[in-house]
Image (cartoon, rainbow, N blue to C red; front, side, top):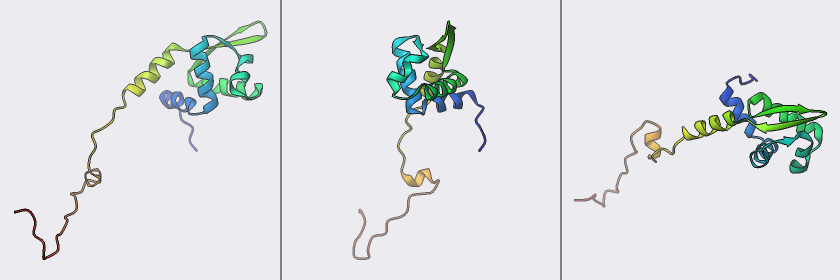
Length: 119
């Protein structure tokens, strides 16, 4: 399978995992969070947290800063802005009959011989 390289796809794919979405929600609420504090919110072990943080970092969602032996993470405002921009490009289209979606005219409805249509 070909790996996506489009930054927008990577940004969106990173949010598709429930654990990573939980991490992003915690960062949105708490600001900076130590890597050691994510295991509590997500109910997973530290190696799994590290994997998810790596995916978020590579997708551009988070930035990290080492402070002594701990790594602190924060959400990148640019990522949030891009996410909003992508979501803002989506709009609900006007409902159309299924036949129009297929590029065909709607099928004719034939009345039995003993019935007549509108006069």
